[in-house]
Amino acid sequence: MVTAAWVEVLEVKKALTAMFAVLKSFSMLKYIYNFEMKEVITNNGVKFGSGKFAKNKENYSFERLLAEMETKHRHTRY
Image (cartoon, rainbow, N blue to C red; front, side):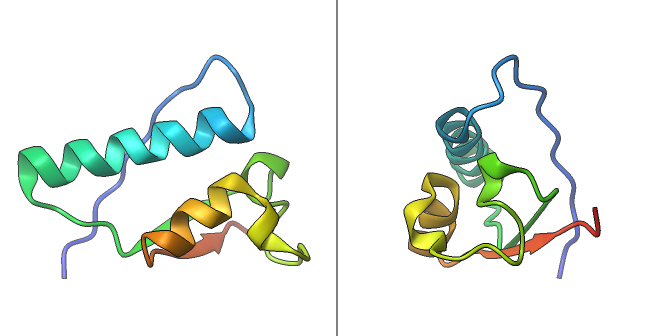
């Protein structure tokens, strides 16, 4: 197993912006390095599905993307 980190600074803090940035990053990592993400760690921000205690996560674009890609979503403590 390989552990890696990817950070991208976004000018706009919106759920769709975060979702597309992750999708772009996943695609690039797969295309260039043949590397697939199995898990993502984010803070508890609304753009990421309002954290680990959120209800109706299927209504959040970021959560839906991760579910479709079968990628586990973990949250930071804060």
